Amino acid sequence: MADLTSAWQERYAQLQASSQDERLQRFYAAGMVAGNTPINSVPLVALDFETTGLDAEQDDIVSIGLVPFTLQRIFCRDAAEWIVKPVQPLAEESVIIHGITHSEVNSAPDLQHFLEQVLLALAGKVVVVHYRQIECNFFSKALLRRIGESIQFPVIDTLELEQRALRARQGLVGRLLQKPMGSVRLADCRKRYSLPYYHPHHAMTDALATAELLQAQVAHHYRSDTPVAQLWN
Image 1 (tube, rainbow, N blue to C red):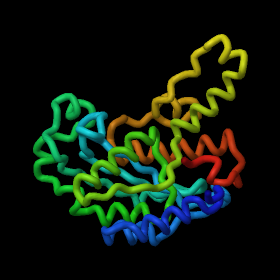
Image 2 (cartoon, rainbow, N blue to C red):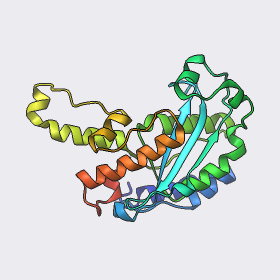
Image 3 (cartoon, one colour):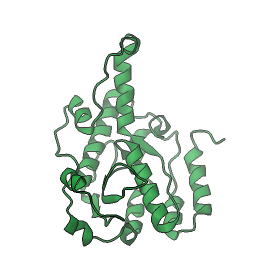
Image 4 (cartoon, rainbow, N blue to C red):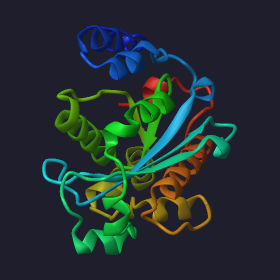
């Protein structure tokens, strides 16, 4: 088994060789940093999806937002957002949550139309999300439906990092007494670091909120030269 310094690098080489889709081949060919790379030297990109529901088997992506950044800077000029036509109609309750209307998705292109742009924006960067089950599962299922292949990449999950911090603060006694750790919703996590409130359920705004949250988490709980393998999955 590859050690943590090279595991994702080797996995990318394997995935590039086995992929049949040229867009995915180029994505994997861009490579991935070694696991021992200090987090302050890692190119990052915050990613957020709005979806028709929470079940990746049945639901689909309706918008994608991404914001490239490092620990030192957020590159808002290079941020991007796409509205996606899902494979099934929008439910009224999802419209209420994210505000994307039936007319917007009906006139939007399928994910295949701009998949290459999305992959290019992610290539070579470590993806940062808040609750990785959404972005990882939905992206993989969306690609399986459309091109017959899924996608794999390392992810730093700010929700998981916050859970680590809250468990450390809770301590052994707190765990034995089953004291609640606190909410790990994105807005509640940001509040702990005195970050401003952003209206939720907008893909690009949530991606920006996630990028800022990771910067704050590292500043408060980690050294800036922490190996990225200690943060990603």
